View 1 (cartoon, rainbow, N blue to C red):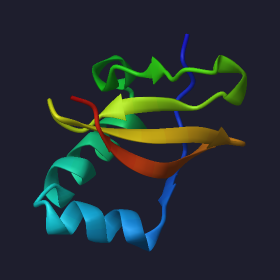
View 2 (view 1 turned 120 degrees about the horizontal axis):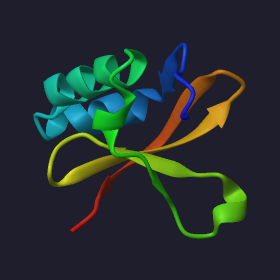
View 3 (view 1 turned 90 degrees about the horizontal axis):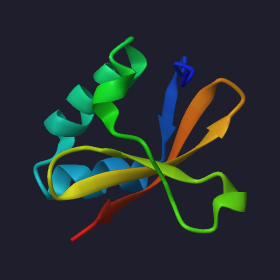
Length: 83
């Protein structure tokens, strides 16, 4: 069973990136779903080099948020165009 995060942290540069591509509303919606019990929707994926414990969740069909666990919280480090 996947544990549910308590909070999601991201850098200001990530929010600027999302706003410049009109993805901020979709990102907020995805974060709400991740923070709720609807964790299966997020489609978490383990990234390569599994020893780093870096994962991603889907924002929309084109973009994914790259994150890692910090205690009980998620830290978003990058938004990736995974085409």
